Length: 294
Figure (cartoon, rainbow, N blue to C red):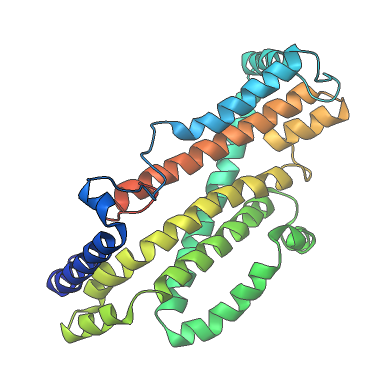
């Protein structure tokens, strides 16, 4: 989309820039003349700054445990959790369950993203597709995927197919809602200009639809990644024989809070890392945008 209107955008951009400069000078008066300017944005980004919150949370947990303010029967301390994690790694139990969980979450994410994008493009670029698909999907949006568990178990049983389907449903709805909203928000002037330039369908998709829908796509992808982990936590406690959730459920039977926390930490690490990965890809793909996020 950025190469579709190079000349059309330059005129309004210059007018807007000049108007903003004039208005700023008029409002600021002597302050602008002295070269000082009020900062309104969030400031410069700090590398790995998003780790500050988790690190502070872990430090607070460690301090509460070391000072005796944290009852180990309610919540195990970091030292005990690290020791338990080391034992689980040495026996291979943690790695085996992590691999199974990653496989389930990955398959659900793949199927959900694919279905959500296809449905969004179909509904966003076609009135008939919109009339047929948007209503049912908006209804599904109001129905949590977990509320459909009894029906999915009845249809698919309690095996891997049901677990992956539950995850995929949650991901697909998030992908559809955000990608569809981004598609339908594309300025109609771009479409009119593409028609005036007699662009083919493939060129229209490449130059207008894809750039215009990418911001919503990445928002949906971030929410979809989160949905995949949320769905995974639930389905792994339904007649599962492997996975992080199964490991936590078994630990609950024996009041092993340290094992439960190891599972929660694993979920948290995977969720944080996957979101950070999507953010990094988004910054790379959408490097042409200048936003407050930097």
